[in-house]
Image (cartoon, rainbow, N blue to C red; front, side, top):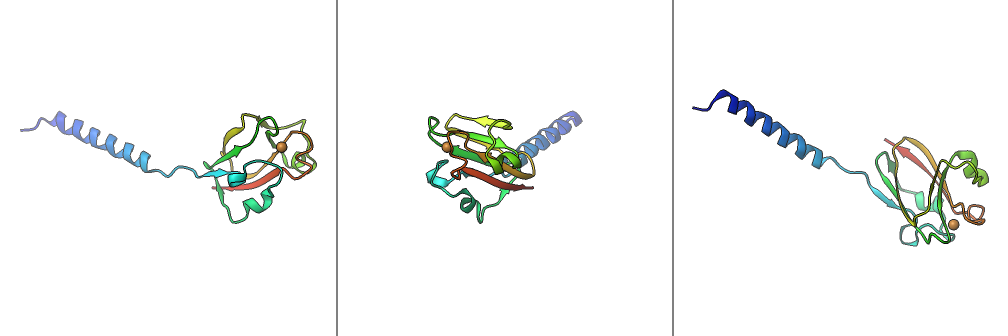
Length: 129
Ligand SMILES: [Cu+2]
């Protein structure tokens, strides 16, 4: 006859196993490689690139670029509009930067090198739940 304590132990073990498997089944955020194979550079129109895409909280933006030529500045709407480089929110400059979208709303990115932003190297996306 099974001791009552063992029953509880089995139940707890089962529930732990189920919780772990539901965690593993939880869908992860999507990866979006900015500019696809072109990456983050001067000749891509990033407004076109965002067309037909959905960005959700938990998704990851991947910026691939030559770090001697470009960087990624997360900025506010004003800095996005006038390419202001002084008051950026975050600066990324590794050349292969993964940025997790943790908040709902508009997110703005510019290149802070040379006059790249003025020449159109900027990205604005709307992140939803
Ligand atoms: Cu650039």
